[in-house]
Length: 196
Image (cartoon, rainbow, N blue to C red; front, side):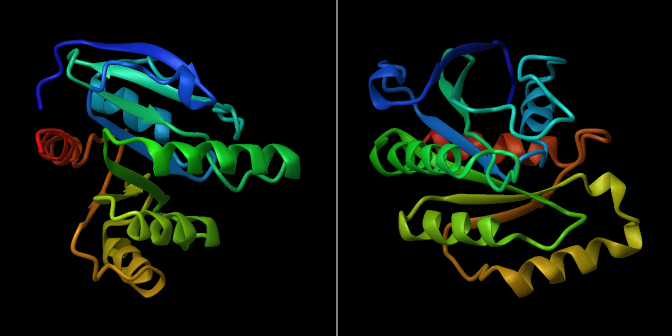
């Protein structure tokens, strides 16, 4: 995928704030601080389009990024951050659920999982929920550069042990924003989904 233009478009917390142009959308989800903003910036070859933070829980809205005037990447709030109140977590959950269930131009969901850790209950729940919605899923194991090469197979085994990958619409990639591992494959997956 060749990126010609990428711009922040809008932040939304409800349907009437979403873009109205019916362009295809790819959503990005994952626990807080899993690397969604870094993945967006790496994919788009931009330094700070999506703001990165060492403090988890910074993304609190659905952030729409317009790419090539052809589609949107949608950064959803991270889940599982303990310092957010229970009420706020519930609001995030409802906002994400409303978006995933009602957006007809949503073409796929990228679920980011930190390769250094077991998938969390929230990761597994999001994966199962996306399956339930019949969404094409790309599971991206982030921060793979922090894993020894000899441990990469272990990461994949751990993923398969925790998540049922026998789903027709799932693809799995390892990814690094540092080394840019599998950036092209990520772009190809997105391109394939938005063209359907």
